[in-house]
Image 1 (tube, helix red, strand yellow):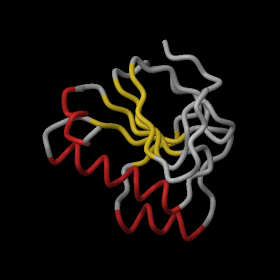
Image 2 (cartoon, rainbow, N blue to C red):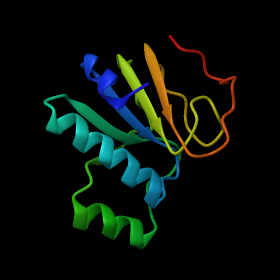
Image 3 (cartoon, helix red, strand yellow):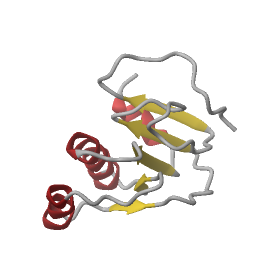
Length: 118
């Protein structure tokens, strides 16, 4: 699959794992930038129990104006969910229902998610 194939979707949510680090935020921001540059509406979120608290990450978000939002109670069902630096349905990412899911990750791939698609 090529990234340009995802341009057919209009409702796009990019989700970092629950405790985002610099590579999750950077990957998510790169996708957000790509979609917005090409006229697509995309949202960059993370979920879980805790807000980002590490000072270096908070500085990164503020100084680079990373448009990530904390959405612990996210209930929307996007047309496309892209998980970055994590795998859909695994323990480090809160399950988000979506019509279609794409996983962008550099970790070993797990084939069976624990969260069903809608």
